[in-house]
Length: 173
Image (cartoon, rainbow, N blue to C red; front, side, top):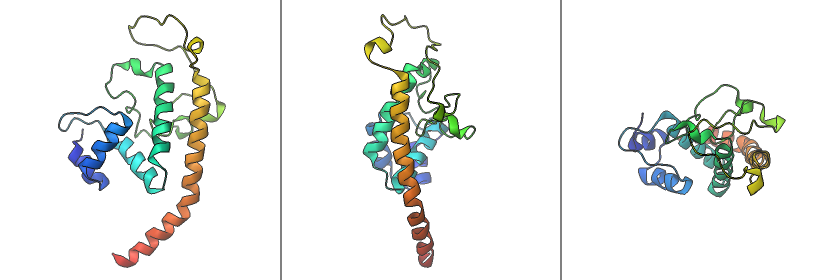
């Protein structure tokens, strides 16, 4: 568990910046040192991607898509307040994980398949299927993968410049 101050020190950012990320990404605030490890890992991912020049707007767009997808897959039925961050930091099966939430879909993302209809909550069933209301998990997954591909291509193209900048900066230690 972490406090907002501890996370700010770890990321070399100020608390105001992290508070702003919380608001802009719609993350719940926790009291004191009760932020789970996944929260810090999510912040790390966002800060690292921003370091590569990925716009916060692109990251927020991807975050919205991932949360919608996870909601359609009923990942939100676990009862955790931070259900959308709980997989952050896990390292196994990278090829099956979404970029920001790091949620493992159980199949390689390139397969473009999802297992729909899982719901572990005690909620009443919806009157209509999500598909009938215009929400389609496969469409959302496709949108996520397109945006993720763009982001990762931008990271790959920026990586040589970042390495060169880090090498250059060692002159001024």
